[in-house]
Structures are given as structure tokens and as C-alpha cells.
Image 1: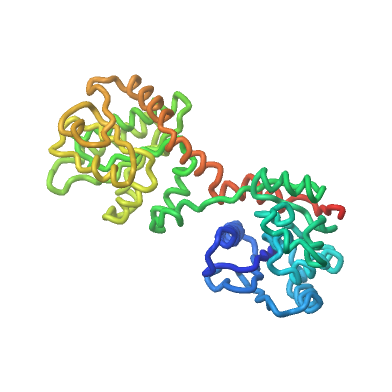
Image 2: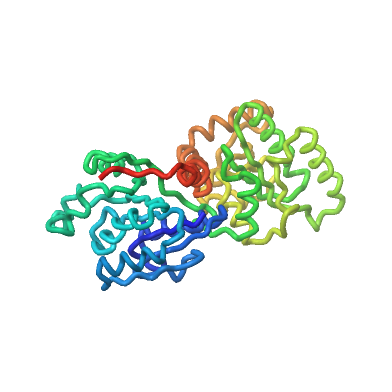
Length: 380
């Protein structure tokens, strides 16, 4: 589809709505749509396919003529706040004329804020310009970013209004390298119930197989875990091929290759990749019972990640370690893990955000259905 987004400004101009517009552009383009951005200032950092520069000094008649030509052939126009905030009345007035002039185009008023119900904008609501924002526009559909502005739109403008939330792009927010971002998306790390990281080499004393068995047991309990082991075999220790073969056979036997990942199979793991996995992971698991110090416990603390490990020294003496009896069986350990994670409200909130508020999820659950919906209009 051909989609246009309209807002007053766009990045590099900073602002909350500007970020949402930028992310929607990226999301629509990733889904294969052709996207145009129209704004007064900014837009130079936008990934839009084309840009429609707007003139703040233009009259509503000039803007109407200009936009009628520039938006001809566009399937859907998303107007962010320009229909409900009085920052460019001439633009708002022009856009209100366009459903009649371009009836084949869908016009969606995207509401982040509603000046008509905000006393801070009382002065702006006076006079002819203020009247533009006090009634619904015939030919526009309305979408609000949360239930609060939705209720304001429906009660004040007396028009139906859907809710489509804002979102986040975790890969961009966390500043992940492209290779790790691609793995996170393709392997379902964002959609898991838990991403568990073991920053260890593939050595027998690291007992990596315990994590593999825990992942399988948790999955049988309906808890979707992703287990990432960052290290490769140790160049200083020969004869590790037998152990790695054992781990690979265990993955195959338990049917968990889709949830147990040896990062060295996908990339050369350096300091940047290791930091990226710390960012992606919800928690760190160190099942090995013999450590000289346990540096990953400190690293995890810097990244704000809880560390689960057996109650052995020196691991149990480091700040941030959450310990379990070293002789705990795998089934008991799996149940303990799940109970611990469910008590970590920060992790629970993080997983909900990643599953439901990631832009790809918002596109699949909200934006794509909106675009596929039949052309609709609201009475004024």
C-alpha cells in the first residue's frame, strides 16, 4: 500500500510523537509498504520513501491544493495530532477538506493528545481556528494511542475511536549490532517467557547440559525459555570435541535445538556480541559448580540482570547471586526457576513489553488489521 504520515515535525527534531512517527515509518516499510512523510521541519533522518515538505506560511487554500496533488494516489493517510492539536490550524483546515477531494483515500486522525479537553489550550480553542478542533471531521477515522484519549475523543467529539498503542523497537533501543538483532528476531527471543544467558565456554566443568535440561523441563511445563550459551570451545583445553558432541546430541535428543543456542555457531563472539546478549537476556544462569571467581555475576549486575547459580563459593559470595542447593534435581530446579522468574516483576513487565508493545507485534495485531479494514467514514 501507499501510506502517508503527517505531523508537524520529524526527527532530527526530538519529541515523543516524532519518535512514534519515525518508528511507524520503519515498521510500515519493513512490512513492504511505500511510505511518504509530510511535515514542516525535520524528516532528514526519516527512512520514508519520499518526503512532502510543508510550508508554515502557506494559507489553507494553498495547503489544500498542494496536499491534494501530493497525496493523490495514496491509499491511507495517518495524521498524527494535526487534527486535534492547534499548532498549525491552516494545515488542519486543509486536511479537513481532503476527504471530499480525494474520496478513495482513507484519512485516519491519530490522536496522542486532545487540546479541546485540555484547559492549558483554552485560549487556542477560542475563535474560528478553535472551532476546527471541537467537532469530528466527516470522512476521518479516529485512532487513539491509549484508552484515555480514546475516551476523550468519544465523549467530546461523539465519534467512534479505536486504540492502537505506541511501541518500541528493542533492537534500536538497546543499540544491538545487526547480527544479534537479526538472531533475536528470527529465533523468537523477543516472544519468549524468559531468555536465559550462560556466558561460559563449552567445557565439562561449566555443566552446560543442566541448562539444556532445564529449558526442556520448563517447556514441558508450558514455560517458553530460550537458553543462550555465548562461549565456544576453549582453545587452551584440547579434547573438547567429545563434550561438544555430547551437548549437540542432547539438544537433538531432547528436541530443544530451537530453544538452546550456542552463539559461536552463528557468529564470532567478541566483546560487542557478549554485551548485546547481556542486553537481550532477562537473567544469567551459571550452573557450573567449580569457579575461580565468577566474573559473569559482576557483569550481570552492571547490566541489571539477576544471576541464578548453585550455592557454592565463590559464586554465592558475590553480590546479586540468587542461589539454589547444588544437589537440586533438574525437575525441581526447573520449577524453582519458574517460581523465581514469576516473582521478578521487572522481568515479567519486560517480557510483556517485548511481546505486546514491540512494533512488529503492534503491526501484526493492530496496524495490519487497520489497513485491511474496509474504507470507513465518521459523521461530523
